[in-house]
Structure formats: structure tokens, C-alpha cells
Length: 483
Image (tube, rainbow, N blue to C red; front, side, top):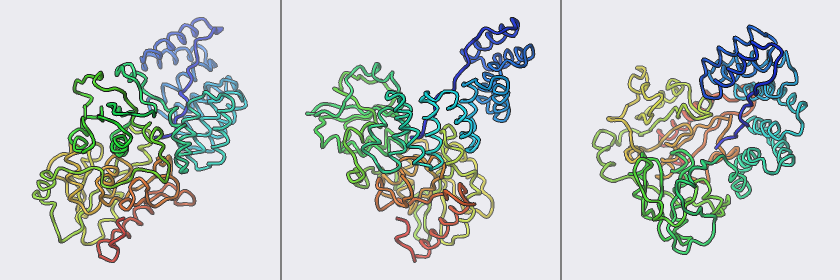
């Protein structure tokens, strides 16, 4: 889960003094509202050709350029809007958000302060500034901003969600879970399921359906609550989730049914349902009561044996899996992923290690043609299913990866796993400063980017630390180093 800024503000059609420019601007707004991006750009540019000082057109053009990832042009458009209309709040907010997303923190903070001067009673400005300060690890300032946003509007869910993210990262789980209930939620789920949502009351043998409102890694992470629900009195437990996890999670002994999104099912056979990410809150989880009995997932023995027979079995070398990139669609992927496979080059000098690529999707093509100096083995077939991936991981001695679903899978299987963490927007579940994880005790080790100094936000020092730890492990002098 990550901080969530307020959506950008479109400047509505206004009465302007140049009738032709006004018509072009109005047409652009209409086109923008229905997703006709290129046509809207042309309309706004036409309006600006007729009336160069039309701030609203500059502001809306900036939004479209930002969506098209033309960052410099977008920022210039917002600046043009503010040059012609210094009090245009929409342009000021959108500029601040863009600068924050580009990690231009000093400039973004100045823009947010300018927006605060324009609308000091608007909770969205304080919430967005608090979210950015959280990312900068100025946590006291962030708390002050987020609490002020909630003082201005106690019902402003975005500020409460951002506050929850910060509290959970600080280890204040009970308070953070409560705030996390304000997260953006797919409202259509309730209507589609048509059954009552579980709110933490006595289950008394009822059949409960878990509906994931998050990604693959989150479901793997939170599957640990299936036996918790059984202990709380659930009669039957089902998961309505991603198809790629069905074969793996169906093996959980306490799970009665796994219903993939792409297959029909009858919601009426379930008495109640619960959003996946609400389980820690409803089960009253604190830092001391995290359900962390490992392993809580198991690979299919036949698949494990098949992978071993394909050449993974080896007693002559340490078997290490590598994952260096995540899903490009993730909001923080540019920071959480390594730039390329070449970033791991310091690992290749460690003797006595066989490296296997567990990379799928973006970056997987790098494993097919690694540089000659990289002893990396691509797997015999694609990993299209998490049950197959679990069999591969079971054959490994260690997984090294960035923050993706793979590290959750290794942890849930009870396998040693080293996680490479970016400093910017570190996910809440890894908390602050820790080198271990209470979610995966005894098997997970965290390697973090520096937060300050010349090496802040750099991957090089992290990879060097991993290489040193791996050398000790491979040499047999650090057998406990994997955990």
C-alpha cells in the first residue's frame, strides 16, 4: 500500500473574453472528459494560439501532457498557467503533485505551500503535502500535516488513508489498520456479491468469502489469516481471487474453496464476505500478535521433484534465485525495481553460487541473453502459475529480490529470502529501519537503501552489502546469514 495523492483538478469551462478561444477551450474540456486526449490537446493549443494568456487552457493542457509522460512540457504548462493567473489553485496543486512524483521535493514543497496560501482550509493540500513528507521520511512534519487535514475535515478519507500508511510503517498497527479502512475501495464488490460484509462480529460457523482488494503479493501475504478465521469460528472459508494463485492456495488445508475471477460462482452460498486488506484490522492484529507461523504455504511435491530433475538439484553450489524488477504498472516501480540485470553484477564475483532467474514479465528477456560474465540460468519453461514458482523456490537455498510478490511467496514457503528495499515509498509492511520482518520471522532479511547522505536512494551500496553477505554464506562461514 502506498500514499495516495488527491486526484488532479480539471479547470471547468469558464466565460472568457475571446469567444473563439472560449469555444476551443470548451471543446477541449469536453474531449478531455471522454478521454479524447489528442483531440483535447489540439483544442487547448488552438485556444492558446487565439488567447495566449488563457491560464485554464495551459493548466488542462499540462494535465494531458503529464498523462502522456511529457513531464517537462507538463511542468512548463502549469508554470505558464500560474504566470498568467497566480491564484489558479488547480494549476498550483497539479504542479506540486507532478514535482513530488518526479522526486523534486524542495520545489514540490514550495508549490504546496503556495497552494496552502491560496486555500488554507482545503484538506487536500495538507493531505498531499503530508503524503510527500512521509515519502521524504520527515515523519513528524507529515503527521502534523495529515492531522491538520483531518481537523479541517474529519471525513476526508484520503488524509486518513495516508495517515494509516504512515502509522503502519511506524509499527502502530492497530491505529494504522483503522485508518486503512478509509482506503480507496472497489465499491462494485458489495453490489456484485450481494451478501453482507463481515465487520468483525462472531462468525458462529458462517461461511465467509475473502475478496482480494489488492495485488498477488498482498493475497499471498494475507493468506495467513485463513487459519485465523477458522479459529474464530468460520464454518467454511473461500477466496475469490486471481487465477494465477488458485493452484497454490487451494492446497491450504484450512481453505475450503478458491474461486478464480475468471470462473463463475454463486455468491449466495456464502453467508458473508470480507475485503482481504481488512483482515488484520478485523482480527485485531498488533505487532505482537502477527500470525507468523511459517511455512503457511506448501509447494506440490510432484512439481518440486520435476524441477529438481530439470537440473536444479545440486549439492556443489548454493542455489540462489533472482528477481530484479516488478510490475511496471505499480505506482512506485521506478524506485522499487532495479534499472536492469546489470545492477546485480557484484554478485557474479561470488564463487560457489548458481543463479536462477525467477524474473517474469518486464525484464525477463534479460535472463535469456545475459552477459558472458553473468552465470545466470533461465528456467526451462515460463513461470505462468504461482504453484510452479513455488516448486522452483522450494528447490532454492535463497531468493534475492526486490519488493514483489516473489519475496512474499518465498517467505510464506519458509524459504530464506533477502529483500532489496528502496528508500522512497518503502511499503508499510517493511516498517522503518528494521533488517528483519515480523511477518516472516527467521527467514527474511531486509537490505535498505540509505535514507541520507551522498548514497541516499542508490542501489550500488545495497548490492555490495548483499554480495558480501552472499560470499559469507557461500563460503560456509555465515550459515545463519540467510536468515
